[in-house]
Picture 1 (cartoon, rainbow, N blue to C red):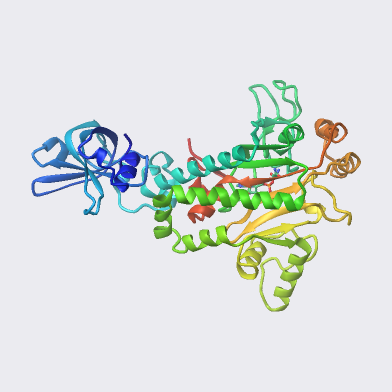
Picture 2: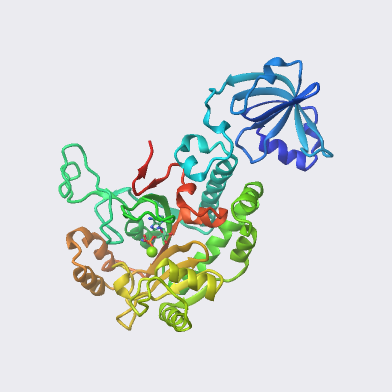
Length: 456
Ligand code: 4AD
Ligand code: MG
């Protein structure tokens, strides 16, 4: 049995577990003795709560057990509904599996998140991070559940590719020994690199199955050291045939609310840690996210709103506000936190600030793009309707001087059994930030990978 199962049955006051003999293994979170009894707090990672083990103080071996040790306890369950802990385990036998060294790092009081980042192999044993990675796992579970319940296929797109989907040139090259950048003998390909997005490779699958998604690691060699950018992060990319921009936004909102709602329900104790110690307003924010409907806003209207704010005396660092501006995070913040006070779908951006594959609008200036901006996080998702007109897509690839040979396979999809389609990408770590209130992306990754930072 796990501690989680024991708590679940105890909450229901299920009498069948009273007196039941179980063996629980895990890490010691604390050990104290008072008079003739001792109490060990044992955590097995299955839930936030630790289980109280009660032992007799004549058990000298148990008394010597230190915080951080791993132990195995055989004992009897007792329901104690009147006590602070609704259940406890009366020890019959405690075995030490592994002791801790004198200088075991987690014995120190209060460690900063910055310090804990340097010891990712240990920080997962702290309350906060232990809760965080349970939430991260639960979020991924509900992401898959949403898509599978709604008839999507999970497609495993490649990690190594020759196509730079976003066209930013910020890629990590992949070299076999003896290879040079620009000529991979191993792959017989000019520029194999780690993927920045699974989108291009998932599109053909959307044309065959109509509803598909990717969920995997992506890599960006951005030389920026922000709290929202990682070099390695996970992305979820649904791609849907016959979807237009409105449909795409509706799916995005329904999907996000489904995942967040179910996760915070399942992880109530874990969320409480963040609501108590990280962000006192977290519950209100999450409730707002779930109950307010996201706002649809045109890019051009946002530019006007920002200009108006400027006239009224709001100071931005980048005051060059006009059509064509790629919004900075200060502008996103102003729109989501001051003007709309909720998530916004920013739509129909200028083509010059967006990727080559986005569908051109009739004005020839904007594309059918949508970024979901949320208070606190900024850009959570980026998506678009895809250009399905062969000639327009070819023209765009040429305008941007992209290597046509590398994209012919993608372009040709527009000539054979083509169909309109649209999709978006959700940065998974940013979703973890939203749900936990954690404000640095490095603290949402099991092993942070960022500009000038990679341990192990
Ligand atoms: O807006 P992006 O660049 O869009 C794409 O990659 C599209 N191909 C997605 C699609 O339409 N299928 O990235 C999508 C999301 C962003 O909104 C952001 O949440 C996240 O991925 N993201 C990052 N997250 C962490 N670190 C980075 N360096 C990120 N870059 C993008
Ligand atoms: Mg984007």
